[in-house]
Length: 340
Ligand code: PEP
Ligand code: MN
Image (cartoon, rainbow, N blue to C red; front, side):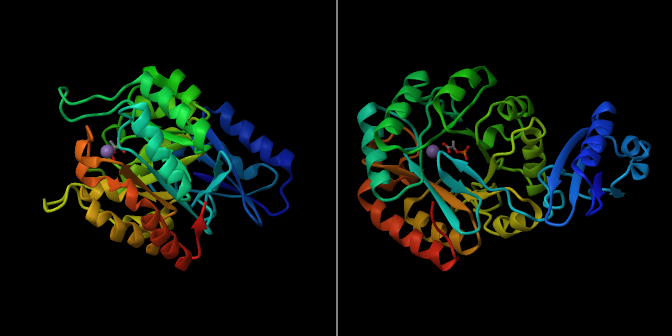
């Protein structure tokens, strides 16, 4: 449910509504708008209806939030986008574009620092790199683990780029909170609700990837698990879904971007590397992502992808990255955005 206050409502009247909701065990989220403030009341709608909130001073009306996702819904934010900073880089603003780039996996200090220098010099906004890898086979390389996080910290120190890395288990919360700037929740963990709640409690921005076979409604309900813990710095990531077509690794759902822009206030990032599985498609799909209104892209880059331990065929050649970045940035400019 949503409690809409009158334009004249005072801060004390807003606090009184929040207190009444919380006393009834309902999660309250205050969303100040240009004219009026709305308070999201997330809990049993019948219970909220019975609280008699309409009688409180400053309350205009109590209306249902019609979508299955509540906190992630643009209904709750008066259609205002969520904008935040990752170490000084703006994410989610209508005039910025985030270029997140780096190796699929941290394999060694030299490999990671080499790619980090290349992407930093070409204007990337953040560095990606997996230290804990969710591999389909338990016999495949699982990542360097804690040693990988150490290498990423070194890369941040040298290049100044904030670090994005995937947290695969709740047990890793402390070391991720210490080491990375953005916590990635991978596609395979989008419905790991316990993990989402743990990530929601950490004071770090989150990149939440869409599950391989998840609907957009399910993605936004997964985001609600993080948001309800008080962490509002969530970016969503469209990374391709399973369809009947097996020509590419996954099918990039570009329509998801404008749909999400209509239905949620959260920023939307596109991952054309995992979606296509083919570096030759990453350029065109990145430019398309900018054209359909994405807030940024996340792409994989390697100096020598032929010998990469994971996802070689989809990683851009580091030597081509500067011209790739220039082309993407030109397309982002056409959409009114510049690299963050
Ligand atoms: C990744 O970004 O490293 C990754 C494993 O992606 P996804 O979870 O989308 O498969
Ligand atoms: Mn990868």
